[in-house]
Length: 442
Image (cartoon, rainbow, N blue to C red):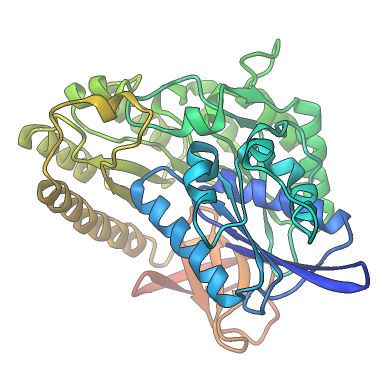
């Protein structure tokens, strides 16, 4: 996702591009950063134009994410050699020093510096300087005011909490996002209402560990938050971005009787082997994961279930991998995000001795990706003839097909003379064309 902004200061127009990598939480953070610039008088422009300031909101969950961040920073510098280039976000939080040492980078500002990014960038004006230490120690953002969707967008990300206390062996996120912190319920209801008034037809609840929402607030939890949002706002469509298997209980699932809650569950698996799950320090077994899938399918028949899987975690044997493959095949996920295990400095798994060979990791990941493609196609074909609500987002090539997303997270396309942007209509789903399902608005 790329956001571009422009402003006039000191008699000259300064343009800023915000380029976001990684998860929906990063997207929510970029929306807040964009709001900060908008409130300072900036206006949106296309990111393909030459900008004076480039901000890359980075991810660091794998070494591939790190590489993509460095590539984006170098690309920004090539696009405008005279620009101010800022590395922000998780990679900058984890290793701001190495990013700041890149010749293309003028400032490395981690997650804790995001609320001060406008002033930090202003500090890079001629005659001023900002040290990496200042950026790294800037105060955090717990309850930034929200804004509605940007022009051309109809889906708003709302961060309900940040940080994770469940320190998995492979995961760098607790280090770059910190301990769990909850945004107060009343503030979130207000933010959702603001997004709806600004035109958002769908609101996505994001966070590092959504199921832990409210653990430090008396009487607050995720189910209660969802109940309040549905009762106190006019949101047309509400989506929960991700859950852990152990968090899927009867009270939470009972909320999906409200048709405004999208029947899509992203349920991280990581491995189907109990031995590997234990080494990862995950808090469930393969059986408990399958039980959670069963509860979802009983409460919300036909719901799509997507997942994350790591291939080649240290110590993963052929038998462990076969158990993971078999579980994924049994569930029949609507989509799988597959990652070869990536060593993350600062995690306990980085110190494990029994690392899997790179060629074995690639082979296992490739097998899972092939399975993912087959399962995704089978799920989409099973929808042929079904009628689903679609949020139409944009027109391909300006005058081509309309493209949208069903409530159960399937990308669809149609040809229509109607102006469908940011409209939710019922649509009959047809055949699969590539990764897109053809649809007919009703």
